[in-house]
Image 1 (cartoon, rainbow over the protein chains, first blue to last red):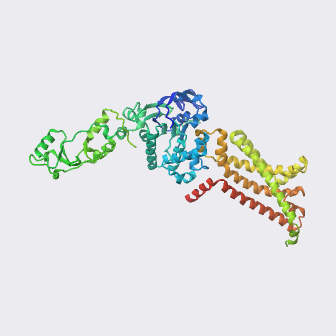
Image 2 (cartoon, rainbow over the protein chains, first blue to last red):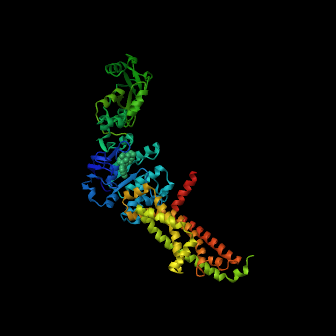
Image 3 (cartoon, chains in turn blue, orange):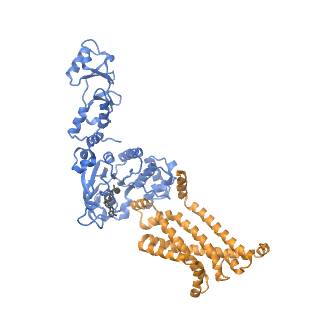
Amino acid sequence: MSSAERVVFEHVTKRYPGTGAGNPGAVEDLSLEVPAGKVCVLVGPSGCGKTTSLKMINRLIEPTSGRILIGDRDIAQQDVIALRRGIGYVIQQVGLFPHQTVADNVATVPRLLGWDEGRRKDRATELLELVGLDPTRYANRYPSALSGGERQRVGVARALAADPPVLLMDEPFGAVDPIVRERLQNELLNLQEQLAKTILFVTHDIDEAIKMGDLVAVMQVGGHLAQFGTPDEILANPASDFVARFVGADRGLKRLALTRVDALELMPPVTASSGDDAADARRRALADPFPYLLLVDAERRPIGWVDQDDIPSSGTIGEDLATAMSPLFSRRTTLKDALAMLIEAEVHAGIVVDGKGAAMGLLTADMIFASSRDGRSPEARAGA
Amino acid sequence: MIDWGWIGDHLGAIAGRLGQHLELTVIALAVGFALSLGLAILSARVRPVRSIVIGIAGIVFTIPSLALFSALVPIIGLSLLTVEVPLVLYTLVIYVRNIVAGLDSVPPDVIEAADGMGYTANGRLARVELPLAVPLMIAGLRLASVSTIGLVTISGILGQSFGGLGFFIFERPTFATEILVGAVGSIALAISADVFLGRLQRRLTPWARAMDTQAGAAT
Ligand SMILES: Nc1ncnc2c1ncn2[C@@H]1O[C@H](COP(=O)(O)OP(=O)(O)OP(=O)(O)O)[C@@H](O)[C@H]1O
Ligand SMILES: [Mg+2]
C-alpha cells in the first residue's frame, strides 16, 4: 500500500481569460493544507470554484499563480501524465468507458502503467470486492448494465486501482438518490478507515461535508476560502455571516449530530433494586437534585423510574413502584438523536446503557444544551 | 420475357463482372476510409479544419455522379482512377461526417475521466474515442457501401472496361434480360453488403448491444 501524502495549496489563484484584474477569479489566493490520510471536503455554492480547485491538483486546469504540493513536491515540476496516473479521480457522471467491461474499466490505470494481464485481473477482482460488488457477477458486465449506485462504486474502484496516495472526488454522489447516497457515503467512510488516503471531496451539500470531512473548506463565490476547519469548529464558530448562513440556522442541531453520547460526562443515577430498603432509597433520592429514582434489576438493567415522592418511608422497594420509562441510549447515539428522543419522553432523562444493557448514567436535555453552549469539541463523529 | 438461355450462356461473364464490381467497391471503400479517418481526426483536433472539411464535403455531395465521371475523362483520361476518384470522393463525404459525428458522440465525462486518469492524447484517441465512434463509423460504412455499389453500376457509362454489373445495363439498352441482370445483381449486392456489415457491427461492438437492450427495456 502506498502511503497517503499531504496536499498543500500555496496562494493558488485561477483566473480564466476574460476575467480582468478587477473581476473575481474562479479561485482567489487559496492556501490550505490537507494532512496525509485526512478527508478534506470543499463545499460552497455553485460557481465558487470547487471544481476548479480540485482540477488544479491533477492539472486538468493549470493555476494562474501559486503552487500546489503533493507531499513535498511541486506538481508543476512533475510530468503531467505520470502525476495523473498517481492520483485517483472520481467525477459525478462517473465517466466509465462504455465499451469496456467493469473489470477493464477498473484496471484502466494499471493498464496505463503497464501491469501484466494477470496482475490487472487480480487487482480488479480485489477492488470490486472492496467496493462491495461481487466480481463473479459484475466483472464482465458492461457499464450500461449497472445501476447508478453500482456505476459509482465501479468509479471508486477504478480510482483506487493503482493505490494512489491522493483521491479527488467531485460530487461523486451527486447523481444518485438520497438513500443510495447515504449508503455510498457510509461505505466510503468505512473504506477510508482501512485505506487512510488523502481525499479531497467536493460537494455543495453542507450536510454531506460535515458527515464526510475530517476538515471542511467552505468556499465563497469569487473563489475565496471563507473558513477552513473541522466540521465542529465550523458549526460552533462560523467565521463570517456567509459561513453562518451557509451552514444554516440549524447549525446547533447539526453540531449535535457530530457528537456522540459517550463524549459527555454522564450524570450518575440514584438506583435501587427490588427488595432494597425503602427508607434508605428515599433518603438517597431526596438528597439528589434529580427527582426520580431508577429501578434496576440485578444486572443493573433499567426497569423504570420511581418518583421520589412515591417512595415509601419504610418497607422495601417493589417493582410495582416503577411508573415511567425513558429512552435508552447506546454510547454511540448522537446527541441529535438523543435530543429527539428526549423530547418525546415522559421523564426528560435518557439512560445510557452499555453493550449488556446495564445502566451507565443519565443524560438530560439540559446537559445536551450545556454541552453545545460551552463549545467543547469532542472528536467523535457521527454517521458511519 | 427473361431470356434464361442468355443467362445460362453468360454465367462466366456475370461472375467476372460481379468480381469487378466488388473490386471497384472495396478499393473505393478502403481508400476512402483511410483518408476520412485522417481528415476526421484532424477535424476533431483542429476546429477550423473541421468546418472546411464539412463544407467541402457538402459541396461534393451535390455534384451529380454522372457529371463527375464524365468531367474527369478529359482531365485524366480513361483509367482506373477515372472511376475511383469520384467513388472515393463520395465515400469521403459520408465517412467524414459519420466519423466526426462518432468522435463527437463520446460523452464529455468519459473524456474527462480518461484525461484525469492519465491517458495521453493519442492513447485516449486510440483506446477511448475511436472505439466509441465505431458504431457511427460502421453506420457510415454501410451507407457508403450501398452508395458506392450503386455508383459502380453507373460507371458503366464510361465504357466496357468499367461498371461491374452495370456493364450489362449499358451494353445493350434494348435487351431486357441483360438490364435486369445488371440491376437486380447490383441491388442484391448492395443488400448483401449491408446485411454483412450489420452483422460485423454487432460483432465489433457488443457493448453497444448491451446499451440497445437496456434502452429497449426502458421504453
Ligand atoms: N473554462 C472556463 N472558462 C471561464 N470560466 C470558467 C470556466 N470554468 C469555470 N469557470 C468559472 O469559474 C467559476 C468557478 O467554477 P467551478 O466549476 O470551479 O465552480 P464549482 O464550485 O465547481 O460550481 P458547481 O457547484 O456548480 O460545480 C465559475 O464562475 C465558472 O463560471
Ligand atoms: Mg463543480
